[in-house]
Length: 103
Image 1 (cartoon, one colour):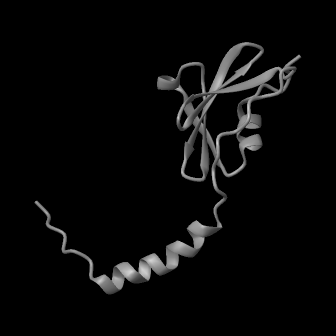
Image 2: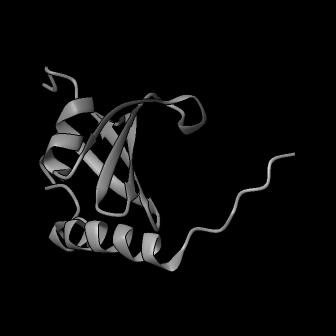
Image 3: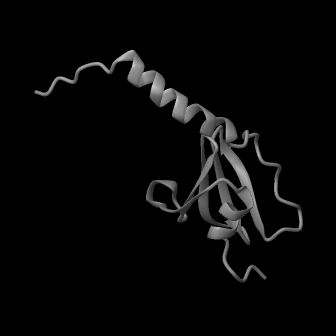
């Protein structure tokens, strides 16, 4: 068994001083508006922090919202989907799992 010593307040404050400015630069996250009605690629919010992405009515992946980051999972089932991208841009997240030809 390994016991870890608690970090000193000075070390915690130094880490907080380095991290906090970076966190303030991240964009705030609000739910994304639904896809346009005529779009072949659509997304629906299926949980407080998850979107399901469909192309031509078929599920192609999922987008999890983790803080300010969109984590993109490709696959038809969430429990078997594979992470393919992490991004700060929702459009890039959707584009990364959308098929090239959605006609």
